[in-house]
Length: 79
Image 1 (cartoon, helix red, strand yellow):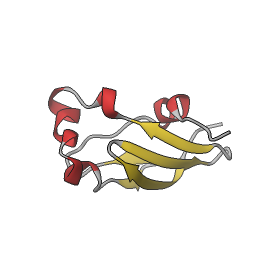
Image 2: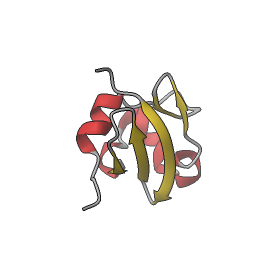
Image 3: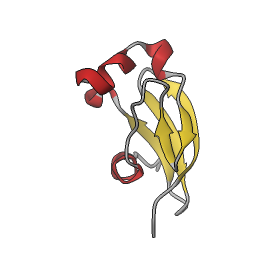
């Protein structure tokens, strides 16, 4: 099954709540990933908050995106 992000919401800081096409949902903290020329600009929270779903994943106007598989592996499912 190919993973697709179906829904995404900003939670706090660098945390996004996601829902995937396999039924998984939960929060992903991306704070440790925001380094370098592609992801570094997302350290500005106002930029970070302006994500959208495109091509089945979360992306930003800066050109940054994360593979849906990476997001799925790192989602923290609420107990």
